[in-house]
Image (cartoon, rainbow, N blue to C red; front, side, top):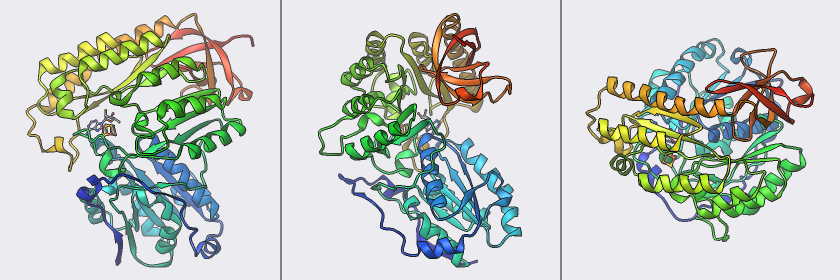
Length: 479
Ligand code: 5AD
Ligand code: SF4
């Protein structure tokens, strides 16, 4: 099979940054009618790995596919287009993708007309793309995170030619206002406010795969949120790799605190945001969060390490002391605040003493939730070039010890909630127990309780009667 290369990735280009990002609405694909005519009763299957940015990208792709006549299926064998939306942040996420493509390639052998597409962050790395193309001859479409607006044209090209289509351009990226989006939830919505990342933490691949920090126009974000409020949405999460950088690349005189306040004023019952880099978390933001009851008192504030040498080697731009001062200000100004974090153990050459600094920081902050990771070298990032003297066994042992510390605090916090009543936004039937319903408190605690279908998408009062580390059991108050 021949290969049609439209673009391939380049890590140096991916790292290049220019000042402004252009905002554009993509011209409509001129063969859309023809594409629509080809697609008769066809189905698509899509599987997304990784962060909320990928989840939101999936919604955009679903909207586009359904706009030209595809319907969704959860059975890959029924689909004529299969899209695997990948994550590159750690090696184990990538391994799962290799496994899944290995299973799906049989379908393509049976059905030569099937489009098997791989997109997302993995294909943005030249070596991974090469490995995928060498290993899986059955994949016939590759496109990057910047090519989603071209989806109609890419599907058309893959459908009407016998070629493998590769379209991955490493570029700083634009802000593309695409209309069709099939949201995955009818009462909780993600709204992008800023794309990409310019922080270049030395271990992280994201700035290379998702391009530069570029904010959506203030009015575009507000318009989208306004529509969601009108449609009856109960919760909006403002999204970005680092939402606090919002507006810094624009000339609109608005920062993230302004945006957060304006969205809160629209009257959405629950407003969340993620992720926040501690470096540009302003006091103004803390004040806005404290002021508006509909801004949830939950902040995800990745610390990564509690040791200054490691933080510096990671390129995190803050010290342990500065991070702790920020936490202190947050806890003082925002009563009932829940804090969660990301922590990496086993960064190259991390010593036992340095790791203990992470444990002691965890014991000071007493996070209410946390995500923990063993460092995973990402080719092309500065940290991947550092010779590492920490053994796998030491990294695993540190990971276990860290989890023990975190869980102790999380368990204590969970136990302190028993007997109290919380507002819970009901998601639906519990994943593990069909007789129970579940939802999240304002502080992002998962609660299971006996409920009914009418409660789905509504905010109900639940009294906590039992606590576990990561979830709670409760009962509905007042029927
Ligand atoms: N290895 C391990 N964890 C990583 N993260 C990002 N890059 C790596 C890596 N190379 C973690 C960070 C980040 C979260 C989304 O993933 O903790 O905050
Ligand atoms: Fe990666 Fe750091 Fe940007 Fe987060 S802030 S996406 S960890 S480079």
